[in-house]
Length: 409
Image: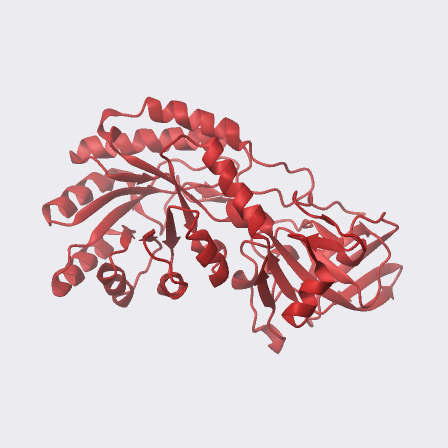
């Protein structure tokens, strides 16, 4: 029998013993949505995470949402009332923000390989562009000149350090992300001399880290590096985006980040920030930490089969909707996300079973040899921690299966 990750707080059994999400019975949610598979996002959980951030982090630190974590439009419309900005990584994400009717909230655009069309649209719309190379900077200035607009430009820094313990390291090595830190001062001086509206610096050293001490050390190094760059460029940055990197517990034995300890450490660091950063506004950019635990993927068992003493629960969903839970989205060794039989939520485990999807590939496994209550065809399965990098990060067209539905409660 294999372990699985901890179920996020905020979920409980309703009067009929079924999983309730945001106070709504899981079967009723499925019926209202028109069937399974179905992603359900509980904005109450997102709201609690935002409240935790506001309470834990130093006053004045802005909260930006990384749209790549989950671009579901109702979620974006809700978030615009509660965060200070949005960070996008494509024209599609920028258009999703605009289609959601988000107004009056800061938007920034990061990512390598921005096309001229993307730069043109961002400049025309007054979006802050995080420049990823000197070539991109030259193109942005040229396009801005053709538009007769003063571009809002920030520089993404490739730092000489990485976030220790990160699931994905994005610093300390050669990278397509950002400009090596020692070349940044010259670029900043060039942007200022060209008359651009220089908005500051963007640093991102890694993601999915649960160790608050590692996060605090990365923030400390980031603040110091921003001070060094600003002094060398002789330009004070209006804003420094320190990235984020806060993870959520997906797997057996993992625990939540101590955000209160992290916030206290960051407050001490900002109180002692280098002189060139005295008037700088600091930003923390979060995606997974805000919305990951708020999402549940509901899929219905269509068959129960036995093979060589092993039980398989076959569902109408799978990796084409929830790739990460299958272990095929960056895991080196496959581990189990938290799952449950939603139809008997909280019931005692009585058997060992594997939950698999309906795709014609052995990769399509949502849970491997986990302890579950007795389940059969017709029961609902819940896969937790499905609010970030779920549907939009999965190969929905693979093998021509049906699309999943989404709903927010």
